[in-house]
Length: 222
Image 1 (cartoon, rainbow, N blue to C red):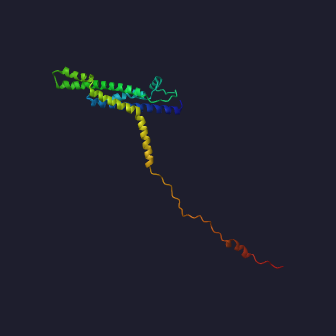
Image 2 (tube, rainbow, N blue to C red):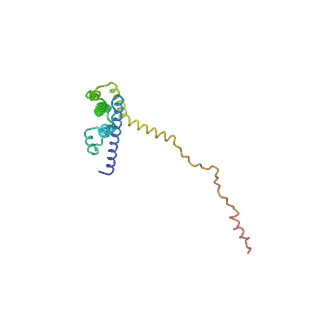
Image 3 (tube, helix red, strand yellow):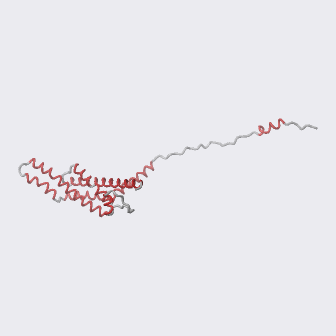
């Protein structure tokens, strides 16, 4: 493999990881916020960070991979030599993946957030502790309209960011560059003085002919 191919492969891998990291962070953060706003227990930062790390590779594959062969190649670290252009994922695939992710986030956040509520409830009440321990689980499994609406709003924002976020960022960067060029100071050229006269040097005829005529005398008579 040539040095140029190695550099291109490393650049593609870096872009792959960067896309996956940003997508995973956005998706997990929106899901955590929506779950909390919907009435659920706020997930701990450790759970959020762990979910972000676990979803880096799936998020990157969702955004960049176009075929199963490319999936295997990327997982094994092999460059794609098919020559085909990597296209953006379809909107249907993004919507389906986002809906599944919101359901998974809701289940994980509810399941991992249930023990802390159960323990705290049991610590304050010695009687009926079995009922208190079962409350978070029943709440996690219930389909509260507020929770469903919150996750639906998070899904809409996630789909919009994944489908059009990169295009919006590129257009915004292009607009910023054009604006910067418009307001950038223009370097003025040095002014050329207009009162310079290019007069030719004066040559006196007397200084050229007088010495020759002064030495020569009248003709001698024979």
